[in-house]
Length: 316
Image (cartoon, rainbow, N blue to C red; front, side):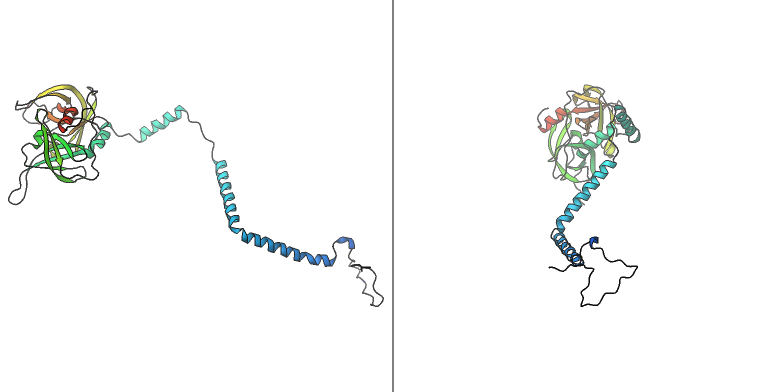
């Protein structure tokens, strides 16, 4: 028979235990587990802790990933919940926003957009004398040209290049190159020249048919009047299918575009463009009843169809 762990009797061979002090009470067997069992509890806890620590070390990486994912999800959820609800825009709201933009940030003018569209294709054309004994050249004249093929084909006026032993073109970025005469169309005062070298990013102009061109349509002339430029002047188409006879009376040109954008000597050969920067003509002459050769309000341009034919481009 097993001995009880707790007993109120003492063996006869052992002296009697000291009586329990009045202020202390004997342990109640019903109060809990025996001392031996209680002593075993710290061992089980240590083993459980060791197992938990081992599991944590083995799965530390995935635990961190999962924790980071849950944390990010919680942040996103919190951000979404804190956002104000979306508002339904009305037509009035849109109109007010557009009006505010127009009042605070004015849009570029028609002339500005047209000029910027064609500017990279406009060149200064210089007629130069033959080199003298010191290798120097004189500028015999200056006009304007417009690149229509990115290989360096340029449209200009015949009177700009006629009689010049050497030709030079200056591109929009300042790049200079010698040019050669290619072809001409004397009845329309047109000439085609080719630059011997071109910038890497050369942009040809966009051409537009004059079939739908209307009187009153806005146009911009770009060129080098009196060698100053590039210069942009704006106006409208003031007439179609006009005729013009040169001051010397030697040549009659027909089917011209009449316009009132300012043009002067040096503007010859420059592009006449629409509001979108599309070339509809080549500026060729100004009408002036005096001999001063200054603009009085009427200029003429050769339709681009004629100019394209001089280069051999297919019709529109």
